[in-house]
Image (cartoon, rainbow, N blue to C red; front, side):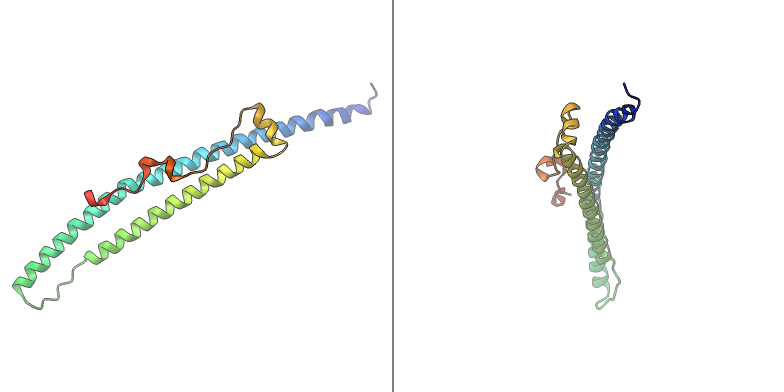
Length: 158
């Protein structure tokens, strides 16, 4: 064998191997990104599930306390200008709910972005060969039908 062909042979063997390893590692990276993003969704949904009933219960109790206080003050002094804080609690509740919903939206976007990257790699040529060889499959985008237990809690029961 002529020594001039050795670099060419090394190139045609090494480049495909390096490409295959690099592509495999991208599949692993995207799969891990999906798992991490799903965890983020789960954490945000659990936070919402725990936060909403507790905040609503607190605001209701405080609102009831203020209503009783106002009624007592009104009975004692007509025309009282008592400064009650229930409206601030309602605003805090609304702000808290908005923040949790934003967290959930961001987590869903991250998840779906990672799914898109993996699916593109699975479907694209020539990386689809590596996907078939190592059994990488397309992932499913997040949808509410898949999260039946992760809905907004019913606050009317609290």
